[in-house]
Length: 163
Image (cartoon, rainbow, N blue to C red; front, side, top):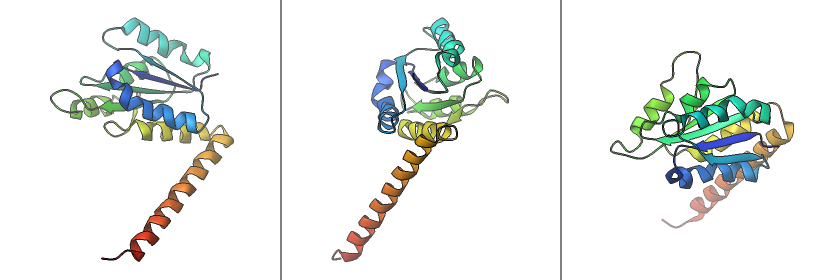
């Protein structure tokens, strides 16, 4: 059963959002990924949010560019944690997306990652789920150790390089 729902406001967001899906897949976290617009399909977006919990979803990752209301719209219709991914698009290249995702009213939070930060949205989802699922937490810890080791390897390579 899927634990994470990944929604994007447009199929043009897919190249960004597949990075979140890749992290979840690597960590063996089941997910559903779909396109659903807060503006063009508001009834569908509302239904996704309202029915997510009963379908076993424990967390939502939502991405949108420009007006970027998807994450906030979903957060308004569920008490599940929502992670927003602002997508670089339009004349402001993602700044509008960032501000509309992060500037939520009190009581309707959206955890927000960087513009096009879908990979970190995937990692944050794993960390949140890791509170409940020790196997996910251990996989995240293992990945962190691997990252640590890679930095040490690069450090040694640099120290040994000729300048």
